[in-house]
Image (cartoon, rainbow, N blue to C red; front, side, top):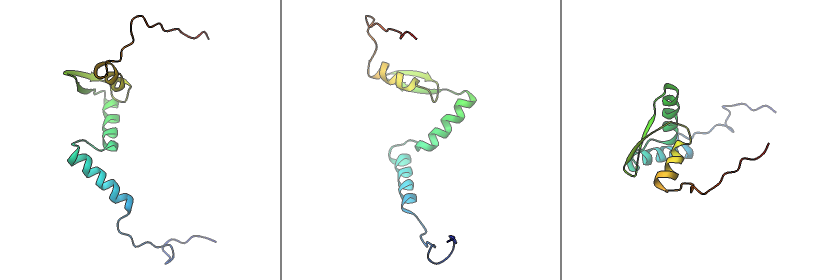
Length: 98
């Protein structure tokens, strides 16, 4: 049996889907209420800026820090400056023998 699109039993007259309304609501919430870009848009901008070579300026705890986009720099900034998680000088790191 072949599927034929456009027949009465497979045709849907819905003008808007539930996922479309949900995504639209999230977009409006991100833009208006939270004053930020939606995740997909910000990821596209970050990818483009990373290719061009532009860095991101983040304000954290009174410091303005330039970080590389799409790297772990933002998590390191979060741990070191905001959470103050730094390895103690007495901590010893041992490399595994390969």
